Length: 156
Image (cartoon, rainbow, N blue to C red; front, side):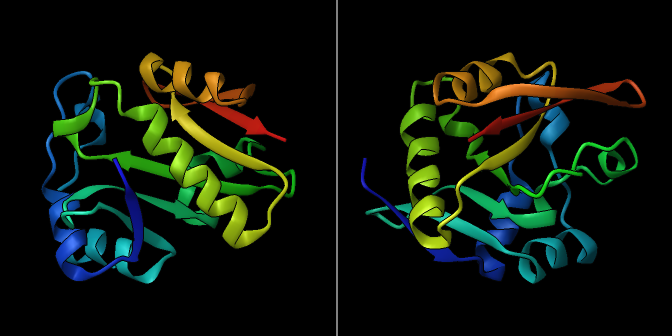
């Protein structure tokens, strides 16, 4: 699968906000609102498309990739570049994750010339944690927000 990065548009953002994941991944479901639309359009979010211009997923960089409550827990004190990713739910669990995430990592490393990356993942998402570990991320800390535990992972 050949992938491309495009600037986030309102059309892509609306598609992303309409995605529905199966439990337990429904934690990542969103609803279209002016606030959620603005989040995707006013922050550094990017669409990932295939050669047919099908929306495969998205990623974001910087503070938009952080869980705000984690800041109060000291999760983001180290000066690292944060990344967040999401894949179209129709493609999850089918073995595309490594190719998709590797593409995003390569793009970020080449475009932004960063040396270290950090991501935050819900602790129940073992599928993603396994992938991130396979691609060189290591667990650094954990924090909880209500009933949800989050893990901070770093790749240096």
